[in-house]
Image (cartoon, rainbow, N blue to C red; front, side, top):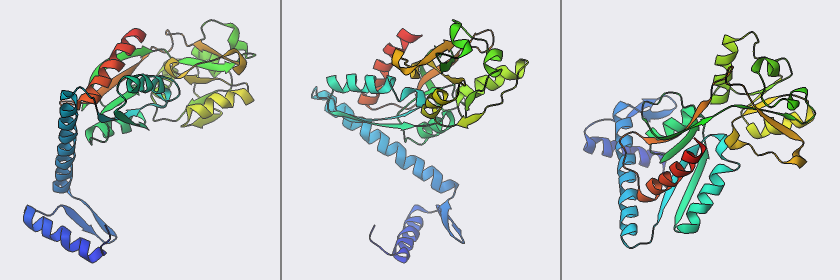
Length: 273
């Protein structure tokens, strides 16, 4: 802002005097928003969101769709699904731009509530308090392994068999891990990963080097013969299918570009469901 800390503090104090309430807690090492400040920031974010929506509607009146779409998504949507869908949408509407941010299932919901994202596309969200589901697509967890792995000869694998081999797991904040934890609690084998990671890309590459088993949902998987990898579905007797959910903040009216993109995603996901 090109002003000194003391000048910034005076501006804040003047604003609080005009507003009629303090919006920061003064701490020994700085400040943080108090409950009144949190409400005020949420109001400003809602106003900014409403302005973007009106701008998008005005652009639509001229037949030239413009706008910016913020998407929070699980890692599985990054390699294939979202690049294809965004590129197809922009081919028809080149005036629309996008921001795509990888978020775990809890962070994606927080992004919606803070207006940081318009849409979230996540596997097995946590709370669903402010999450309005626009579309749900089932996803069966798949085991990923080298083609020379003993389980690769089977068309479908049991979780207990996977856990008898070295296995690689996503960290606790991911929906795949949550479903595996629940299934293991009901079974006779415990999860004892040789490696844990918050990167599905890392796990996919790791199994090339150790003959281990990793886990992923199919929307994030494409295996080619040259990869030397095999993908097999986990039996739903052990691990029921999870839900990939497309959603927005409950009660929010989206800008035109975001709403239309959500409609396009819904059509595609209906083909998966």
